Length: 400
Ligand code: HSE
Image 1 (cartoon, rainbow, N blue to C red):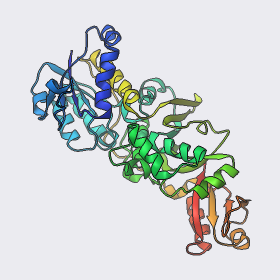
Image 2 (image 1 turned 135 degrees about the vertical axis):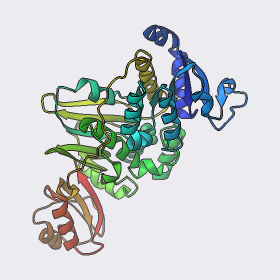
Image 3 (image 1 turned 135 degrees about the horizontal axis):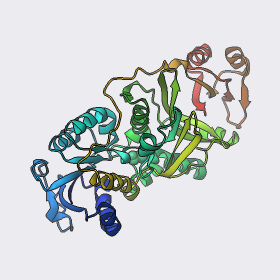
Image 4 (image 1 turned 45 degrees about the vertical axis):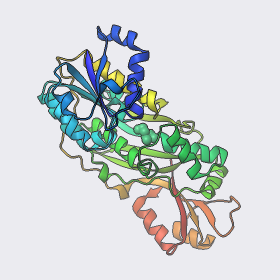
């Protein structure tokens, strides 16, 4: 069975390695070997064993009738969208690890795939090697999913773990994450929470069966977290984690991506380094958690190849995935309720006047006071924080 890989970077080359290393078991599962016939990339890979397979024009793959499945590991919406659409329209099955593409065009590409009698799969787009998409789509189908809270960005989890445990510097740990192949080409997407935002938009869309636009999800990254915040976190025996949160509210969902202070008792507290975990609560299932390597070449390639095997066994059958293009209107973010940790230059009296009842945290930091507010809505919180006066809040992290 002949396939093509579009984009021979960290994940694309990982797919080649998985197919090589596990070729025997994969062939016995599929019923025949899977062979990479063409690799699309801008580069030539002079002297590399992949060189003879390299093509520079995606039409060389579109027009090759021998190629029945295509892997997209290029990243970004364009030109990936144009290429994937052309492959599906030719009846080729496609799997992608590209969350930007899936978050933006997933519903449309699924419709096109179904219309063309083929499959579009995207297991590797969320949680790296963790099979969370298939779990939601095929296993948790007897439940109403009430909550998904994930650590879904390996780069930032790796960075926060190193910064908290080893007191490492932000820029140095970012460089390590990049060297390990965890980070996006432009790591702003990781650090500012945009990657996690797209992933929770994908998960919420497949739970809702309709389109959740990532632009509608309030998103903050970890770039404002300082060693002073970490000092307070240690004092509270909590870890700072970038969480992507989605809760069912009435007939819609309430989502947020932000750094949170996570308590020791929380199942996500112990998820460290590049590991990801997705905590899912169902109305019958109760609490469950799915854990594994969230980024990196081979774990992500493992999910891509899992899709290839599934698609190879269903070449003549569309596997239905419900994700309509119709847009979900998310719940008002200002109604979300959390306790908040604040660092402020205001005095204790002003803080108590603004928030009524707070717990002060003494981390021995000069010139500021740390405190935790009661659980309140974002709207109430904004009002209370504003009453402290402009510039009086110098640090703010929500409590999970
Ligand atoms: N940059 C992403 C991460 C890669 O760090 O999680 C996996 O999607």
